[in-house]
Length: 169
Image 1 (cartoon, rainbow, N blue to C red):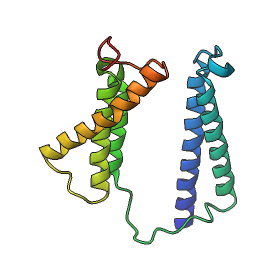
Image 2: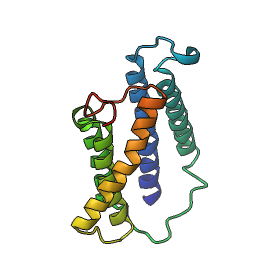
Image 3: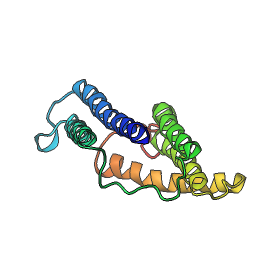
């Protein structure tokens, strides 16, 4: 019985990877493919990742059909997944995607960092911290996101959503 449940879980993961690859492919389909620098358009990387995910999902399904993920180590401590940490990180990504065009790249990525750091701390069993921890994470998030934004916009001339028209925020 436990083997059947394990096989179903492994198949669900494989189908999830396949669906993710297909969803990314559907998104890549609507991206314009006009060639840019070196003849590569903006849809190139999403197509590469989509194909890679579909291949990985297909290989995972093949492994499930052969008897499961054979070389996977057994969980020694029997601990279930830590869902609150996963939820904090997922919310961080979703908030980033929702706010990036409203408050700009730097601040939306900083918020994503704050929420992901909280989820990582909780997943490791560390205390989440108080107001000082939130402020510290926000400062670190801005210090990471700002140079990335400036590198892309100023040096690589790649347009990212900003808060102001100056190009510095």
